[in-house]
Amino acid sequence: MRRATNLERKQAEGGRREADPFANPEAHLFVADLSTSHFALLNKYNVLDRHLLVVTRAYADQDEPLDRADFEALAACMGDESVLGFYNGGTVAGASQRHKHLQVVRLPLSPREEIPVEAIFGTLEGTRLRGLPVRHAFARVERDPASRLARYRELRRIVDGGSGPYNLLVARDWMLLVPRSRESIGSISVNSLAFAGGLFVRNDEELRAIEREGPMAVLRGVAFPEDRT
Image (cartoon, rainbow, N blue to C red; front, side, top):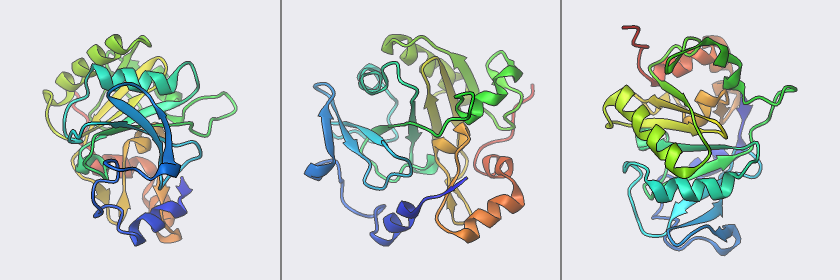
């Protein structure tokens, strides 16, 4: 759990209500052209250092499915680094902007250099992690964009038939997809990083609420009950 002061700044500046910030991005946030279809920006309201946005040049809605070009642009940012890509599929999944964008972060790693959720990978049964008490689908993946796209489509079919809001995590060799039922618990907004093991709060009150209820209760509150059939 981490208190992220930029979340307070985002709320104060009305980040959710402003016009499309990716149509004419601030010059100091621009990082690189990734392809003819995507470019990379620094996240103005980052919650971690080196937090990148992978944005479509032409407007597309955040509710639209990911495609081959999205995964190619994501791969250009990830390379072979210990980073995590993610996608908040819709406002209910924690997306604060409607213009289609993925994100890439370098999470704080444990001494064993694991993303926190990797600690429960030993509970894997088929496409399910028994240690994750919400509906989801998990897969090992190759690093090429075509393989990742195929797996992504398969996981969407498994959990929601390819419709509805969801969070997607993409690491070097695995992928996790979680359908969403709600955007927040109380005042605590939840996005994909929560299912990687990272919860971000705006103030001490929200921090105490998570400590009181427990992180897994937060995940259960914004997702769906695990299907054990």
